[in-house]
Length: 86
Image (cartoon, rainbow, N blue to C red; front, side, top):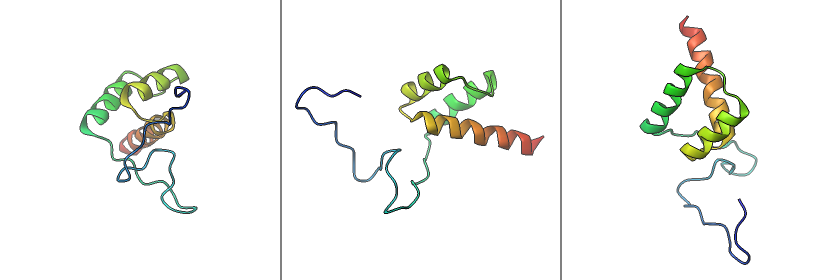
């Protein structure tokens, strides 16, 4: 996001690392804990279509305040869950 001239980007809480922030040196990022509202939105989108295009992924990510990678990964995992159930 472009920030105003001379303005630093908004600070993030130390308790909640951002989606791009690794958990320690060379470690993996912590698992995302989706809220009930986010899961509901993701599930309803999945019911409509199991594969998202780039535009729909961007729209969902912006609306839900998640990264596109998190949305993409959730859909991949959800498709695998469905495959296991069938």
